[in-house]
Length: 324
Ligand SMILES: *[C@@H]1O[C@H](CO)[C@@H](O)[C@H](O)[C@H]1NC(C)=O
Ligand SMILES: *[C@@H]1O[C@H](CO)[C@@H](O)[C@H](O)[C@H]1NC(C)=O
Ligand SMILES: *[C@@H]1O[C@H](CO)[C@@H](O)[C@H](O)[C@H]1NC(C)=O
Image (cartoon, rainbow, N blue to C red; front, side, top):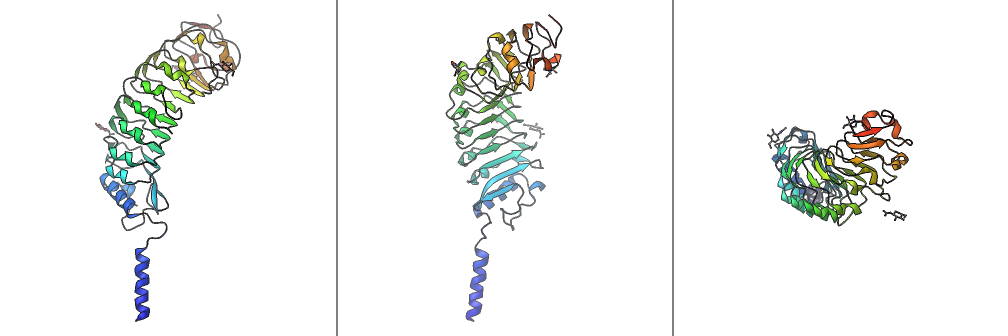
């Protein structure tokens, strides 16, 4: 009798104490509600209420029994990002990508994810303005909202995110100009990927003090000066200002030695190609479709690029174009 009672006690202990790997009930409930909101996609068929969510659930990773990473990618998901996403309080990585039937906007509850490091909502059908409250995610280092249907302006508050290293909001339908607040990043100077939007206006002059690693503004309607991204002492690697309405004198631009990729094509840039460019280790270079004039300086890698990298200017000449 005593032995029996003892073994009953042991087995109750066994079933009621979760193993060291199993996820907390709070996280499991949140995930199951998320699955339901996404219309029970077959992509998430492994999310079985009778199994441990930290073991074998597609896209779920745990640390110390808490869900710290959630990746839902390339599947038959439909509907909106569920508000319950905010209940996964220890989430560090949130990646909802390549989901063409994911609609709506980003729920406000996302601001509860104080440890979120990577937020990727790429190539879905999210729409509406990029919410200002994204900037409340103070731990985010990598923000990728590219290839969506976002409209409206770039929230100026993005400059208030102290750890941000990359702003990837390219390939949306964003309008307006680069916010003035981008002259005042509170933390690191992030890589700026703003290409293929409907952005316009002048670039704030205050951006000249920053040493960006990479800037891609191509395929917008920016006007005026774009030379503030350059500077002899910077360490910038990649600059793409192509397919805009930039208008500045290239002769006056000082190039950093670090530049590897430079695309200025399809603008209204005038002046000469500076000799300094022969000193760069360029892998990609294109100044076609501008208003440049004069002899292409000889030397370095400049003559290794095809004529199309220089063509359609006002009066550029010399190899690889026709002699002057
Ligand atoms: C994306 O959403 C729009 C409405 O915002 C809808 O018209 C369109 O069909 C959706 N595209 C896909 C691929 O689901
Ligand atoms: C670049 O650095 C050199 C040497 O450190 C310095 O003399 C020069 O003033 C700097 N130029 C600019 C534009 O900051
Ligand atoms: C340069 O850009 C023009 C216009 O975008 C393009 O047609 C051409 O192929 C490019 N050439 C090179 C070498 O990248």
